[in-house]
Length: 448
Image 1 (cartoon, rainbow, N blue to C red):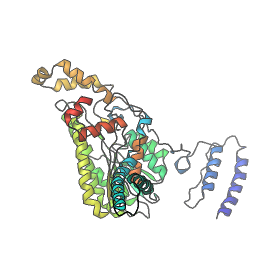
Image 2 (image 1 turned 180 degrees about the horizontal axis):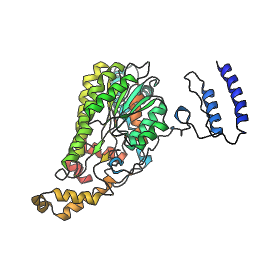
Image 3 (image 1 turned 90 degrees about the horizontal axis):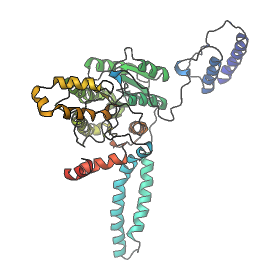
Image 4 (image 1 turned 180 degrees about the vertical axis):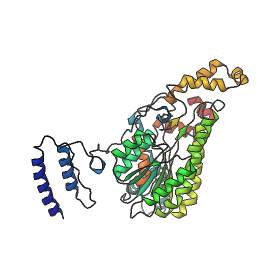
């Protein structure tokens, strides 16, 4: 077949050399796509198309390599603006975020067991006068063997060919980048947008990706759109796919502010998108995931248990998501379905009801909604100070999303994924550890 194709290509190249002499020809050369074409054939058609006319779209368009994770677009619309929920005054540097917490979490308990086993074995051997080997020697030997086996076990990956994933929340910078990255890996991606009508970023995602990526209108708070998306997915699954390999809940809405001040509409929207919507999508897509014995991935927050002012709704919702994921994991374990939680640091690619450009206007609106008793109780100075403290949450940051995207992709492609990934900084890891395992007064000494 390849010999026949190369003969056709030689004839085509000869004809094109003659056609290129004509000055009035501006029609681009289109190359037919056949699944059976070899890689060299596809590259040849791409070279031919670049000689004359605009560059082709679709599977032949030259796209930047995604060996490194893409940053995604920067949306200037207030309704689609990417938000940062960073809990510190500045974003962590990439070097701080590269701690392999997943490997450390997987190795910690086995290494502790190695210490106990080494002590027991050394005691037994010395007591029976079989050997005088020390516990330290046995501990080092057992630790080396255990860590080697864990790393081998940890790095096993699935074959992505013929597997499909559903990703919600592609309006966000992180969802957009993850959709492109999974498409580059070879998955069939169903990318759900809260709104694709007049959304240039949905068109850009489709244009920049392969034909395996499908753009869906999927508002997770809409029952009709969830059911319509499920029907579309069933009709467009890969031929050899028994169901959905993974459902990734990346649609988030972040309501910030003291609970008494946040508009009810913002609270309701946060609940509908973060918790109720994710639950309903899971209910509808669970049969497809169960048939493929795949995964369900929830996006949470690494500091959802670290309570503080202005983050009450955030902590409540993401704590509920983690509890739901834990229960769902127990329910689906016997069905061969993995339920995974990815809990990044305080930077999450959520949309917020606050807007940095209209912060003062929205603050005036909030102040106007308060009752006279509330205004008298809090005072305008306290209210303005609290509103100013929210500025760090509303500014769009060019943060490094690579650790979060790596954790999300690992939860899908690893043969034996962890139940929870925490791509956080060392500072955030320490803060969460102190909050979980020490009395509250001890935490307040360091973080009040």
